[in-house]
Amino acid sequence: MEEVLQQLEKKVRSIAQPNDQEWQAFTQKWKPFSFDKNHRVTNLGQVEPYFYFISEGVIRGYFIKNGEEFNIGFSYHGEYSGVYDSFMLQKPSQYVLETLTETSGIRIKYRDLMPLFDQYKVFERWGRLFNQSVLVGFGIFIQSILADSAEERFNRLMQQSPHIFQLVPQKHLASYLGMSAETFSRMRKKTM
Amino acid sequence: MEEVLQQLEKKVRSIAQPNDQEWQAFTQKWKPFSFDKNHRVTNLGQVEPYFYFISEGVIRGYFIKNGEEFNIGFSYHGEYSGVYDSFMLQKPSQYVLETLTETSGIRIKYRDLMPLFDQYKVFERWGRLFNQSVLVGFGIFIQSILADSAEERFNRLMQQSPHIFQLVPQKHLASYLGMSAETFSRMRKKTM
DNA sequence: ACGAAAACTTGATTTAAATCAAGAAAGAAT
DNA sequence: ATTCTTTCTTGATTTAAATCAAGTTTTCGT
Image (cartoon, rainbow over all chains, first blue to last red; front, side, top):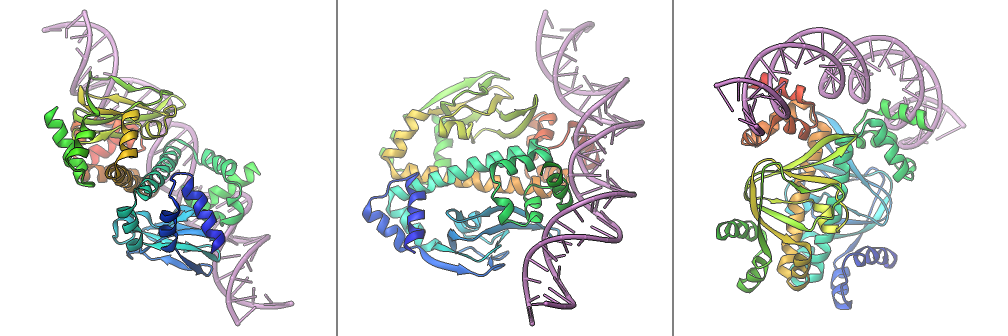
């Protein structure tokens, strides 16, 4: 608990500077969680009550279209995770969140986070800049799926997140890159 | 100027509630702009100094890969426009912003907006919730390009933004939907 | 440790959409 | 108004990647 709070603090302080009292109010609201492998963290249609910060493990996020799963991202130790729109807008989730490994960390409830936004300017800033960084990442992702070929997307992932190949089954990575598992396997053979 | 400020006020007040003094400080920083048709608002590699709110006209945003233009969005009257990451991070833009018609409205400078974030909690909230709404929109866009066929994306646009067909040349819409102009033309024939 | 299930590979075939090409229509400029 | 340029349409061909299929390897559960 101490250690994960330190990880979170580092993350928060990179974009906002709460004082001791504010940090105190903030950390009080985060509670530990722990899930088995392949645990369904958030179900389809569920209103997401939690926003997560991962200490250990990997969480996969995906949506389903015509019975097919489409991965939209993976979260690891030292990162946030959650169904963003369901959590923030408190509406039924179109996404599923599932652990790929045993996963633990801390999480905060919607109804505990909102008062922090209301009471403290510094957490509004944290929220603004957190959103901003996700937004910039989405922009890059969109560019990549619009303009890059399957091979380019594969190579980009290879280069930027080589660790991911160890953590995530490649059928999920294939889906994440918007290509079939077979195509992914062929790319892999080509470049490894 | 009066009218466009009212449009902006409506937009701001839908997510944050500045008081009179705060609103005063905010509006003082927005200055009118006016561009001809096909005006290059933001160039590649330029650090974006402005964030825009459009009163009249249409602005197109795109990036370039191997000499080909990829449209990522269009903005109209009553909406914000800008190169988000270049503006917010004050780094060289990977995007181009260009008017499709004569366009006018108001805009705010980076160095005028930042002090508003620093001084007023209410504008941090506005920024957070603005980012949030863009984020949710990006999420839907990503889902669509990952999981929907060209025809589905065409029909979705048809249904949700029929007005856009009047405002934007269809080669740009094709690019926006991630398909060739020829494919777009064939979809159009099929469903109209 | 064993068998079952899931994940991965590899080749053959199909398909959605891109590209190529050339003419028609619409808009802009003089 | 007429020419020039850009945009749009339509058909023929190509291509990147999906799908289908079947075998192999890895992982999981008991």
